[in-house]
Image (cartoon, rainbow, N blue to C red; front, top):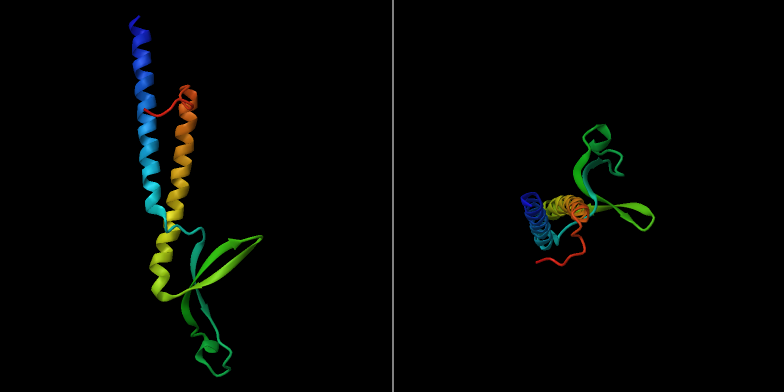
Length: 122
């Protein structure tokens, strides 16, 4: 008799903990509003002036670019110096978003195992 009651308590505690963890992750999502799916990188370049020092090895740059996927292809967008910090933060926010999505998926699978995935949150 105690075993059944203890297992039931344990089940409720597990479900409650998982739901709380899931809600904490969901509550973090609004802080990721600036997310950007892409990669930020720096590039050095040469110009079209034939006597410029960039042709002797002293290239222009670094200049920052954001690599993103649009439609079927990959595009690179120039990022102004004053925007680099915000774009870098946006890319980091996207990585955090992916972590949250993976964790919520794992929690939902665990709730399914506990038979509580379709039960309303209380």
